[in-house]
Image 1 (cartoon, one colour):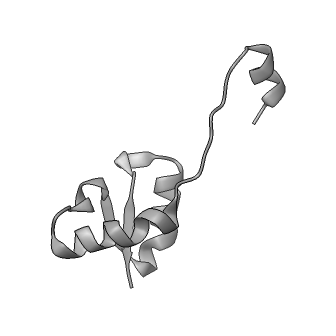
Image 2 (cartoon, rainbow, N blue to C red):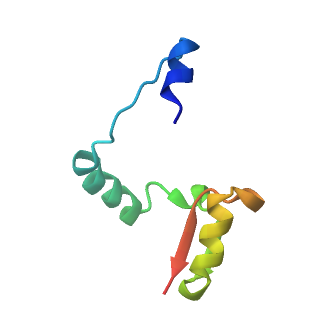
Length: 72
């Protein structure tokens, strides 16, 4: 990340972390009850053997790769 160039352009970066421990259990319970369906974010499904290929596609954002589920 070229922070010097960003500084010269006057860019502002805002960052933070997700409160995983706070939200994981309630969200998982909603998924288990069927109240929410997170499947809409899954763009591709692959076997574990296809993981290297899928990771390369995901890394390069090819073919609409956003969220990949690997099945063992």
